[in-house]
Image 1 (cartoon, rainbow, N blue to C red):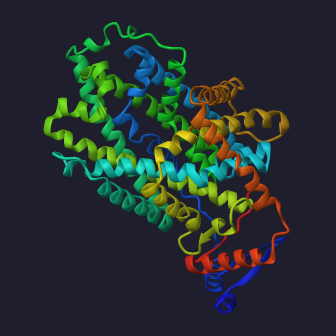
Image 2: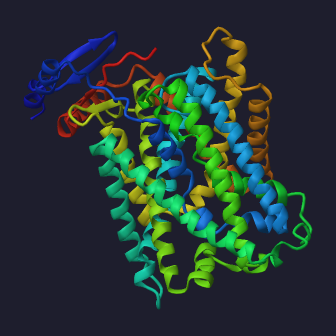
Image 3: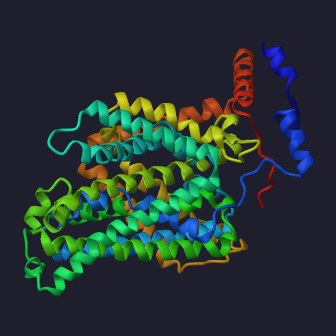
Length: 500
């Protein structure tokens, strides 16, 4: 069977790397003068939709109480929301510089690889593929499943099995969408981003009207509340930075952005301005109707707010929250699959993940590799514990990537930098990230320690799968046959593109 399949392919040798391609697909491409590449289909508007659509998930609608609990007052909570938006903008500006001087997709992985070498970069993608991304996708998908079913179970509790089945369907739809068409995935992301902004406006506009009517009682003595502990304020910043997380996703798809030197910085600045203003005004609107004590007790602030102001129309809010979650799912899968694609192209992940569908020009294997792991976690894993284990890993490697920007300034001063930020911005941002990592080690040493230990498994994995060249013949044969059969089954071929 393998020999027959092997007769249907031929090898194209590039240095030491032997890549296989379907002859029928190659013939079609040669007739059209095309190459198997990821095409530049991410415009400025699509770039903005990727960033906004991924940042705004369920958090701002469901539970912004984490910041209030750790600040102790309405005024300080709004200050923290604003400060976290500015700090996130600093990080996004750093990534704008990295994205315009290193024109490769892959985000954190690529920048760490360029600055500090293959081992830290491999550990980053190892943890992302193994646990972080499947767990994060499952969590946001569970929110989608719960809120899409909310209008149908008004008088009773939603069955867990129903939530998981709808969640599994949502995950599958996102994977199929990203496998079939980059254009359609981007168009749907734009639509969902507009839905999110409409949902925020539905909250903000009545809030402004409430302020005009004089509903300001919850803002009196805004900075008076319970005493803030030494640990409270940093933890509030941690919650806020988590709510703004997602500003880095456009850098995962840099190779697909039209005119990246212009559009990457512009999309980042526009998106962060919109999100920061939207987040602050949304919280202000909440406080026009809900007191600080009531907000802390609410499990879904937007729903509580809508029930008080809109009555029966409040049923529309869970639908908007579900669409918001779906947009985050779509944006996350679209972006992170490019990290796996680039890591495979660098030889850090299986070769099949660097191949492109011969007709649809999507990184099909890098997209669907997440599906089985996400489903396993959805139905069997303690997802929220996994996220607690690895929440510090995200900021550790983002801080490392931004520190790499400073290092590259001195290591490679001749590098072309169309967009350049003042040095104090990456210094401040990387220090803040590393401070949050140190804080998590201090405040929750057990969970963080477990996550750190699991992260370190990337070290032996790197030497086993990447460095060790003298693998047994049976292992080489098995991997070659598996790659070949998957290539035939998925109709994918290696990319043919030189990255400058």
